[in-house]
Image 1 (tube, rainbow, N blue to C red):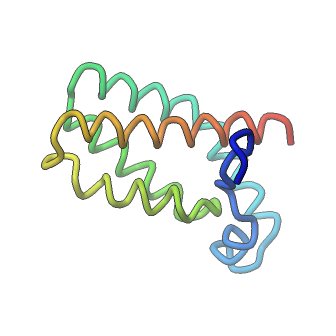
Image 2: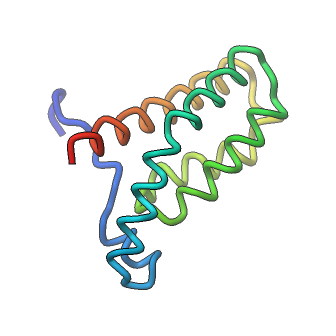
Length: 115
């Protein structure tokens, strides 16, 4: 991958499989997810900056559930791992992992905005 290439986050075949082959459902789930992205980003950012681990855990858990249906397997894995580690990660590692996830969410939002 070159420096200017963005990593591939969304995998349409995965989304199609998650929606039992229903293309309309796959598109609707992705559209709903993209519509909710600003709230996910804002809520996770706010919880991180106020060091509210309970709210961060709650929002990461919700995000984890939503990601299961939109075709983002590697991001889903990152979020799932973080979901189980929030209480035990050192603060510096938590910030790094959350910021990586937020960057990926921003990339999805930007990518889908132009689809």
